Image (tube, rainbow, N blue to C red; front, side, top):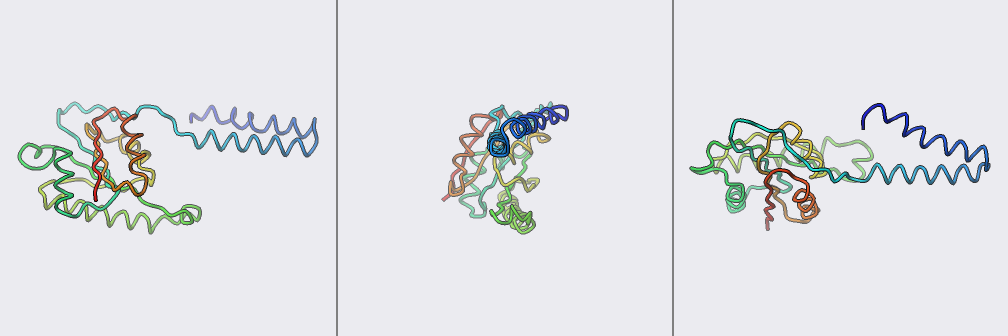
Length: 196
């Protein structure tokens, strides 16, 4: 949100609540305040369906973003991912690859702002995945991202010019829903590799 909009949002909440207290009394004021709070939460929770477009890179190379929602360690899984992404081997040696692992934060940890353990586990998954890709001949950069897969991809594409995005998961933690959203919103090539 742009900074100049914030005073209007605050005024849009405060003015009706204050007017309801003055004109209708405490009961009406509390009711209008509750409605304003629910409306504000509903608007804040709504995800915009704007396209996700990576920055343009003029070098002509492929830039592949692999989003590993699960460990990619098994050689058969690594082969499926590299085949789906078209990386590694003789024809994909010049591709730039970045691996992104979303940090899975538990409900209570999120509310307690205790995200260190989740980030540490994500870094461990990241190391395992990057090492497995390296054994298959694919050099990759590594990043830990937001727990929301779509948000993590959107954050990465602010600076990384991905020409392809490959989501890897088992569909147990909502990867299928994230795949649907990414397929609809991404302005880059997209593939979903289901493991297991």
